[in-house]
Amino acid sequence: MTDVLPIAAPERTRAILKAHGFRLKKRLGQNFLTVPKVLARIVTAAQLTEADDVIEIGPGIGALTEFLAGSAGRVLAIEIDSQLLPVLADTMAPYDNVQVVEGDVLKLDLPALVEEKLPGSTSLKVVANLPYYITTPILMHLLQSDLPLAGLTVMMQKEVADRLTARPSTKDYGSLSIAVQQNMHVAVAFDVSRKSFVPAPNVDSAIVTLTRRAQPLAEVTNQESFDKLVRGGFAARRKTLWNNLINLYGKTDAVKEKISLALQDCNIEASTRAETLDIPAFAALSNALFARNVR
Ligand code: SAM
Figure 1: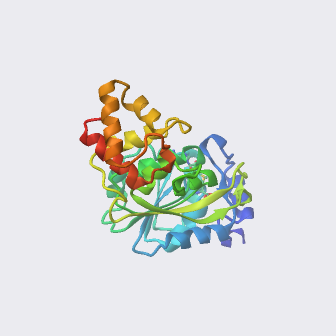
Figure 2: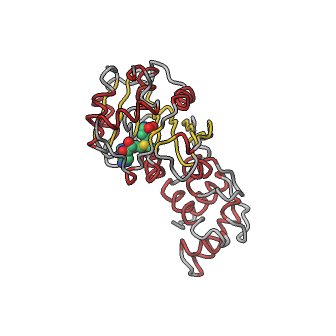
Figure 3: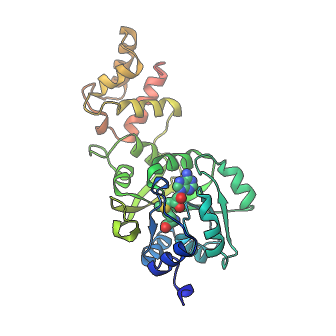
């Protein structure tokens, strides 16, 4: 009887964990979803069709994987915890379109893995309930990889979702908002209560969708200089942009003169704070500094 229930149904989750003698590991961010309705909403938010192949990071015991298997073409699930592999072999046995790979997503060569496991893929999406202790590194790893991702639908702490979607002149706006929004459309699909997980984490969560922009939001002459400026601009949030810039590039008169001219090129006041600058303003300043050899 229990086998007809979704894996995420609390009684089935409990039975699976018990049958395998599996103990949840806090250090690996193992908070498993036990509300099938939430999983169905995640899959709807990801707008999956059979033409889509999905990478899932951290399948756990397969709660989300089961829903993905029913909606996508192929599913490649990457799990770090070797003790979950026999559990997944059991729960995923009915699904012939799911492959499970053991590994740390941050250390894997994802394009090579996709070529090997999902040959001929024409549409690749990431759908995952991310381990919260490494949400930002995973997002940056995925976005900086050469994977041709059509979109990501990912669960994360609400606080990180707020930073990803933040607009200028708000407390959550910072280098992460800019790094992501420069190349992706980002939106919160819906919030998820901490009560939906076993064990319940200390924070509420949100499902965030990220889709690649046809073009970056703003044209950047040199990506490295842009990244450096964005990180350095927010190094000390309470300081003025000027103070952050001279700490970043140097305090000699020659450098100060060039920074001053670059700010004038872009009509930006030295006394402004980085959090008031939108992405096109950051790009313009980065391009002006780069053109004046301030790097
Ligand atoms: N997908 C399941 C669910 O929704 O119930 C489990 C999600 S749980 C929040 C995060 C999962 O990520 C765990 O299974 C954990 O073992 C796995 N994980 C943690 N760090 C990882 C890493 N570096 N690479 C791959 N998987 C990881």
